[in-house]
Image (cartoon, rainbow, N blue to C red; front, side, top):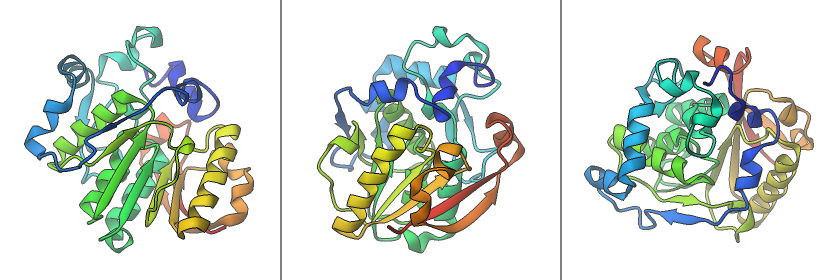
Amino acid sequence: MALSLGWKAPRNGCGLLLQAMRSSGLLLFPCGRCPWRGAGSFLDPEIKAFLEENTEITSSGSLTPEIQLRLLTPRCKFWWERADLWPHSDPYWAIYWPGGQALSRYLLDNPDVVRGKSVLDLGSGCGATAIAAKMSGASRILANDIDPIAGMAITLNCELNRLNPFPILIQNILNLEQDKWDLVVLGDMFYDENLADSLHQWLKKCFWTYRTRVLIGDPGRPQFSGHSIQHHLHKVVEYSLLEPTRQENSGLTTSTVWDFQP
């Protein structure tokens, strides 16, 4: 599926994500106190069973072998099926995108960046970067995505890594009143020009209102490298991607963490 189907295209263009951003939202685990052993009780049993049956638990092929994730891999049925046979919204959460890999690796290698701090993972997807922040000692975490299935996948991935599930906001956070965060992280979000413009403005407001630090992960997509946000970025670290990630991402070879300093 991931080799040929159209749901991957929005990471390089427009698509279902922008349409979904107009949907209503909900907050999963708002108190963030759910015990690890009880995480599965918050999932719809049928969807939980579907995700467990149609994803593979893996920690290989990425920059963060410490983190286990449920992903779509070539050993999964839907990797090879037609896109229209997938019964839910496009599973962007089921790929560990290279920008998120770079952010997660950076947080694991540099725990002082998040230790004791509040962290917002914007466009969390599979939740790997939020999980890395939790592993590195962040005191408060919010994972944000617009897809309820992503929220469920994040919960399963917390369970895999024996972490208490953190709050997950299923809503377009760009339309909400901003909260104060010590750090905002976002990976692979600059794949559409309109979304990139909206993110740029939102991040600037976040920075100037709360002096929030912003870290962006991106493998060099043209919508990011050609955007005006480049004038406000400081390169933190660049990683070489492993071969499986290169194959899944049209031959992209590196992924970089950027510090946004408007």
